[in-house]
Image (cartoon, rainbow, N blue to C red; front, side):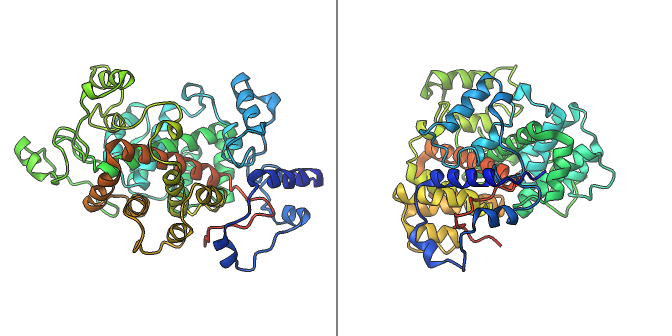
Length: 438
């Protein structure tokens, strides 16, 4: 699988030189642990057997002639001198060229999409999303026995190979923050490059949903039993729905009874025209979002709209880069961190704050807005819940719109981490990793 050619390696080296165009920050020099750049020959010899020298990952570079017209446009953007993706073809953009152009074209059918959603919900301990989608998974003919294996993290003995490869991939991504060669080969054999990258995108999308639901502490309706118990426990057999009064009394003080979350239901009159259309679709009897307006769709109405969230949001680039580093740290994603630390510095993020994130130091002395973002990320990815205190702190600093945008940005960065870990993306031969990962 590994195609080693001296010309390819040299090409890789040239691309690497153009790739970032800036040297590591001063903290990298201070914390160097004996790292030295390798020659292209040494670098090629050091790569794992399943990593291609040209792409520096487990998937080869896509050939332009193999793409459809939309794919060719994406390819040309990456090849352009004005490309803003930082890593070019040997990064998330290049990985994305393997994917389907939209969900309807994906080779990952609805049954396997629902399996992936349950895997993410289990790994993120997201009971709301699991409970909403387990019935849908059953409607898509996902076997109850497989659902129970995911629910209780049982061994994969007897699970069909394709389903087992998806479950194992999710477990390694979320628990270990890396994907073994064996697990990648297994998933690749079952899915192929296109569907595997599609699966990563689906898992990233579901992670985005989990981030928002955890942030607002979304509660199920009073007559819905949670179908995802805490790890090590069984579903209670004596559950019964609460009365409306008992339910209202049981909600935490910062949860609104109408939205069943920490953000109120948005008012239609406060939305722009696009928001009003989305609002009406969630209120329609034909709404297909499953949770309606008291779910991820309703939360999303608080956020910015537009195809490019980075441009539409009011969250500054400096804080966007902070959020990206927080996600990279919590996911142990050294490639993404190393690419974006120079960008964060360029956007004015202070080296001292970057070091707090890098080494998970206490937040003493960090300004309130930055500290609230770091703490939110630590709780979401480390504890799979967000405390009332942390929500109150960040809501005070950002407000509803910017907070929802921040959650969506974190979900986007988590999607990038999922893809980079899956293909085991390597930095260029002359780039020192700026994130210590064990």
